[in-house]
Image (tube, rainbow, N blue to C red):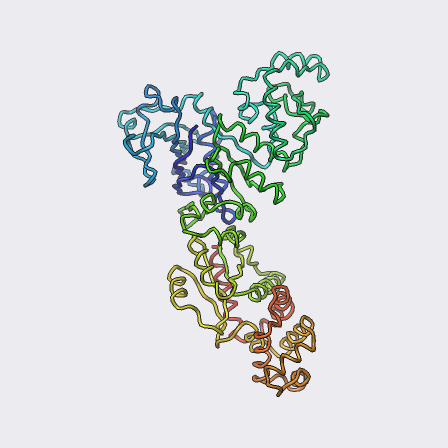
Length: 572
């Protein structure tokens, strides 16, 4: 059955312009919120769905620009014989070059024979579906797909809820399982007269095989339906129509009463069984209502792990579990750059599978701060909590996330994420020189590096830049975290026995700490990891550094302010 080879969108909702070549199999759209992922699913649904009419409003035009038409075009490949029929579609057949992604005016050698279906909406808000090709245009010919062909290629869509797919009604997966031939009108008429008690499901012999498939699919996915699945009249229905016949468990309870996650799993499994009849499946927020292990089962049901994909799936997700579970070629990153939208296959960046699985959450953000270690992550988290409590915009509200660079791997991790098209900054110590070539390449690619001055590590910077009171609080936090005797031993080691913890505490209390004493404490903290954990530094950032931020030296605040300004710029 037909597969989408090329998608083009112009002036539709969140998307001003987009051209994308999706893959067979799973196409999981990821990226920050409001990047246009759902708009892309809606575009496929509206163009390819079996509808005779649609209602549009001015709000469907990008930026309310109804002076330019909405245009959605899908180039379909893997055509079956009816769609390649010369009498019906001969003038409209075009060629697709998979190597270049170009749609050629004519089918030919080395090209896949395809059809381009286009939906346009002018300012009169009336939708028009047409097949388009240069030859037909030159001949002045226009036509749409036959209704029977449109019905066959129409995608199935699973939104937040899927009640309609658990009944026999137009477009439901159960109707596709029975080839749309289910006719229970006589039984429904009798049932309407004799009410629910008189409904005899035994006469609906055409439902027997689908019910077996439903029971098998439920068993495969671990969805509880009991020993049998029945097709009974749904007592909650207002009218007696084709959709009145729905799935029930062995006790007669409608399966629409299943939990959200269970119903979505069951529908996905049924869609897989109907794959020979319809191969395009749209699913919004695939993780919605599912625990992590059930997200993995859902992806399995959609064929994510199979070498030959049984379905072409278009999905959106904000789940790190889904990102980590899928392969790089199944992940498609949606980005908006000015008026242009792009969808980029993650695998096009090279060997990034390890980076994706290690930092799955980062791919759901718009900008990423790669921190040299856990202490920088903790400090930024703590400061973010402090600033947010004071009414300032949080990092997450700006679409930013923090990633651990793991010391010497900082630049390699940042560069890998940068290659995927993300807005990347590095926050690092300067006690060790940066790798010259790696830093130059990262900056040339648009990256930004923020580092503490004076060749200092973070702990050295904090003990040098904060006022006396907060420095004493940092020391107290280290004692509380590590034990007083251990801190005492560290100070003696660093000072070669010239200083004790008691000496430094007295100095801080009477005269304030001298620069040499601050340096000694910073060196000890950095060398022996007094505040090295994320949680400890997060506490320091929230309760010590944040409240003293206005009195701290510019050597600290200029770096933090620069980074926060960079994050805010990336959200615009």
